Image (cartoon, rainbow, N blue to C red):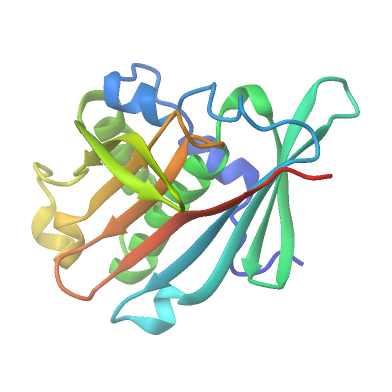
Length: 216
């Protein structure tokens, strides 16, 4: 049985990479994201979700996501994703390494389904608005930040899917939801952090790079 933390691979892939991606989206969905991760190595992230509507949100306080690269039965390599509370992880799916970091679509699907549960809005409508924002919007800012004991060059990429939406008045605090990606080619997995947030305390979700396990 899939846990409440797991997002089905099929659902995440439906969101997928937009057909006409702009520079910001192309950077977030980089197909080279796992280039630094070899077989039997894994990238580990923390995961949290919180907000005012606890029942609809399915809050996560001590979550963990692991991406482990292994040899695929069909040849080549694949990224196996496990998620859950730290120490109680369950497998989600296996993704081709060439498709990029799989937690990007997983994170986006989690954000849209959380919004749908809380607002009662259509997942189809919300998904399409997010896809449109990824295709045509996004701002990119060059930054530097400390990750562990190193300073890395990074980019902060921000999308506001509903900033100009005609139905903003029906979305409550989610009308101003921001999707913030921090990416760095200096880190295995390419992802420093994801963040979805609304004004106030309605909803926030964070996935943050924790460490890199080089294996034996």
